[in-house]
Image (cartoon, rainbow, N blue to C red; front, side, top):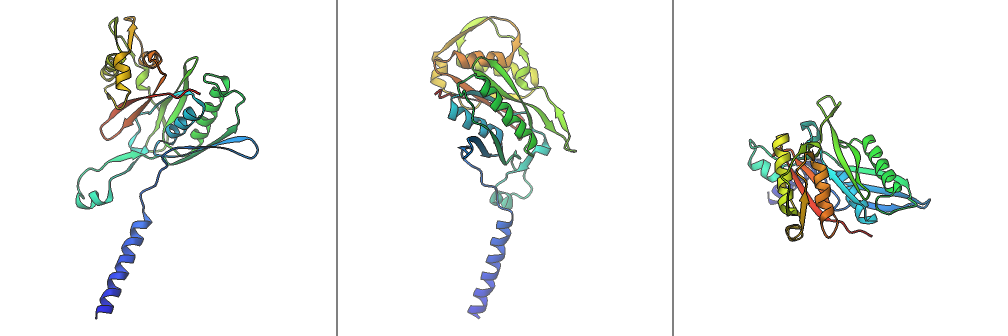
Length: 267
């Protein structure tokens, strides 16, 4: 009897584990990889819910480029459920959480002759990456904007609807805002910019992460004129004593954006 009972539980344990492994939660990478091939080309690979963001972070770190990244407001059709299975089992009727439905992505290009920040080769490489991303099945459509000599922004300009068709969107940082003419800390200026963008777009936009001490001690003076919020963001990032870049990430569950500023390690 004991042998039969043990065999019974062993059978159902195998069935349970097989069912779990049939639909495992995906495993993502902590960082994109950049490899040089035998024929002298560069192979860029990413595996993340936001693979383009991960790829751009790796390029910036590898070559010392200042690359800003901005999510589009992803549609329901570009999201997947990311609720913890154990929590879902005990809360079957509760709303779970979602994530952007990205996964693997790869781009290949010739080794640039000039890897310096702001070079024509930098622009060519980013455009090649965006072209490859557009050909992938990953969510969002992006374009490249040159902010100044050394700064590029990769901006989400399109999402997909229920039919899979692309829909143009106006990036939130395209909105024009006007700040009172006054000298303020970078931190206070950033707060005013995000508040102004929130009021104009209807999206809640908050600071996610930022080098707070650096931004509190650095001052910036702005003329009180209406201009695109991205232009003001570029001035904030460039005014720091060390270069800053940003990642503006969209959270569909809260319908909010989070602005994350980080220090760029120039080579």
